[in-house]
Image (cartoon, rainbow, N blue to C red; front, side, top):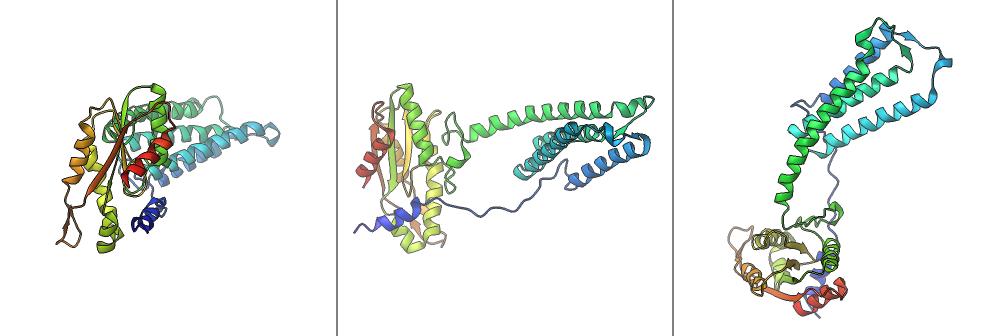
Length: 309
């Protein structure tokens, strides 16, 4: 019986991490931004209640009330999702300020369905439009900064993704594309009908390292393997994790020496174990082939798996 099979089967399972707690990022350095926004909404309500005349219920337009309430609810949800999914910074601040301005404008628009300002209250009559305009300007500037941020992050993801991003297809351990992402990219490459080399690499004795030092040590080695191989790739190349200890590189227009260079980089790696005393040198293995445009991508991967055994 192959001693690698239990380990490989265990590693092939999708890694599920616990859901992190909901933490809202500070805006402009303040974690009380939400409270300040609610106070401003209360202030708008007070202005209407104090200075405006209440509309009779028979003049209420329920379709407008419903639609404007939904707008306020959606803007509030977007704002919370934004703060919950991004770290603090200029981009987060401007995006949140822009959405907040639009939220205050939407809230004033909703209050206008229940109260009516006299015509002499010129400044208060323009409150809704002013909040919307300021919010859209802030949001536009935030989107400009977000684009610059994305360009910087795209450069960091070079080699991990190629012209396509799908967060559900990212391997949680190595932060590389998983097998599903790899198959999508292979099929896209086949449709382009451009020559490419497919290289599969892995560790021969990773199971032995796991038995001797534990699964956490094997995970550390797999995490280190990704950046090690990415250093050898060119712009336009792609590296993915294909289950267990296998990594697959898609190399468009590569020369014959490049697969050997990847194998040499892995073979030269010496892994420092967490015990502070052991430095493991594992044996790397490789299989490669030219990507066939007329053969199913999954079939070609399975053939490489057989060669690598």
